[in-house]
Length: 232
Image (cartoon, rainbow, N blue to C red):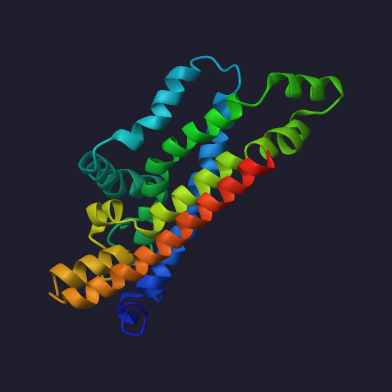
């Protein structure tokens, strides 16, 4: 079940590992990108920015049941009206993208706070001095803010990467890994193997491999952060 040899009938050829890699890559990419954009917006002298910050962070603290109910409603009624596509969660082709949309929406608020905290620790004197020297907004962003945001980039990258690899709740609440195996991640596959197929030994072996992978990622993050601290 981990590969796509017998999943062709569902028109989703990636298989469990393929879907997990697909979901992880795009979830990390779009969650970090959206979080960074929101943080840059809130770092300006925008009116009502405190209210907006709370609104952007709200999805991260909502109950999973509420999130799944609201988005299921939207995919059944609102998205078909907007896109002309009648089936989202029930389509093996579209369900992975629907799950990705929900995951990015819920996860970007937490990363936004980390990026915003990093932006607010940048000395204002550096930004003002670069403006006096003639640097425009894009140059200040690329040559001053981004280099000083490297610790925040490291934290957000590895946090979102490990969370995406072990993603279960959103995928299970929306579609229970379906239709078919279209949104079955490695963690959902472990759950189904253990509690639906009663193959506990096989599920344990899968879980150990996944755990080792996450430990390697976490160790890499700690090493890079310590190396960065020494350089600073």
